[in-house]
Image (cartoon, rainbow, N blue to C red; front, side, top):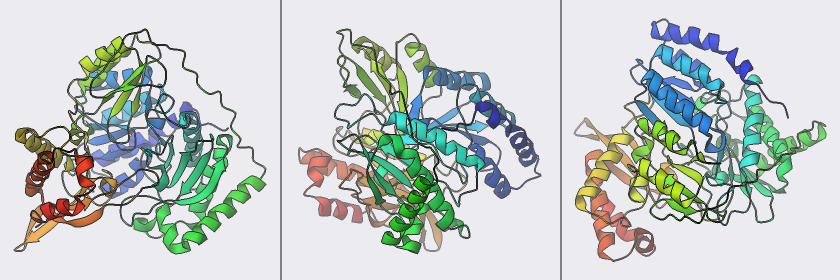
Length: 514
């Protein structure tokens, strides 16, 4: 399988430095710079005075070396803000011209490629975060996802796609990376093979993916990726950027027409004679438990006897930047321990003995205390150029209100907040979701969010949330508190209560609609 070496990516950095200098010198406007810099995984933040850098982590996997690089970069360059994204990457924020260029270059020495982190390119390949260690998984999909990521990077040097392409792999019906509604999703089966879904996605005009192949041998996944790329290049919309995503091909070709087009491209790939078979050496964890045990919120027993994973979820996916250094220092001497980012803006530290799990929990003690506090929020309009509302601020306000109300841990579910309709906070599949907008009252604009209700991402039960109406931002914390109190008074968890009280929940919401 062809692979692009780090030195090749370094050849592109001189142009990035030049254009970044032009932008900060006022010689290039933000639109032109965004069109260029996105392909390098960097965007100027709102106001144009600082930059963001997106560090791709294929499969959300962070080795100790990569973790140390992040921690050292934060310390060396005084980085004061980081964000864990819903695409299993790490974003560094508030970077100067020199910082963004230097960190981007030095990252390559640690196997961290930022190319294609934005722009019209294949994005970070996503994976179920506990793949390989999760009890009940069908099989470990991570090795195939990493191989897919290497292959997709080769397309960056090829013909330009209409827009970005998101590929992911799920290891069970939990469907954590949303494999059944991405641009291309590989869904593990009990028989050790994949079903393949295509042309799905959230955001404007959301679509569930279409089943384009069944019982695919894992060793043959690259043929299906090549077919996806060729289908997108042939039928994607190069004229209207707003409609240049794979899901719009369901509209232009029809569902049956799209499946036929994809399968024709697939046959062409097979007939081409190109050898894309994978022959992977699959990982085998050698570490064993030592008899020590751990328990508590966020502690997960792995399928390897005596080993644990510990989940950490900073509020809004935005940890204290010192966390990376603290975590590295504690896991550095631990055998076979690594970090896995989650698609809901958190992380797991895996392959821990009980005693090691306790030590990790001691340094990751500032995270979420409930499912509700594990809520998802995109980086928001205070930083994002295209954002409409500050989703991070709304989440902080809601968490504070719920804490002050003294609600129990099971009174509210994880919610999903996007600062605009683009669904970077995956609001459309949340039990409760919000996307940012504006509400005009007496000709005066007010910060507001549209409420989405009862979405679901479980395989076989996927559905987009119903839009209930628009709430002023200032009313949302009160709505959540009242909903939580109602649930708590029933002596049931939110998940139990909502089964028979969907209409009651909507009636509570309607009292707060603008």
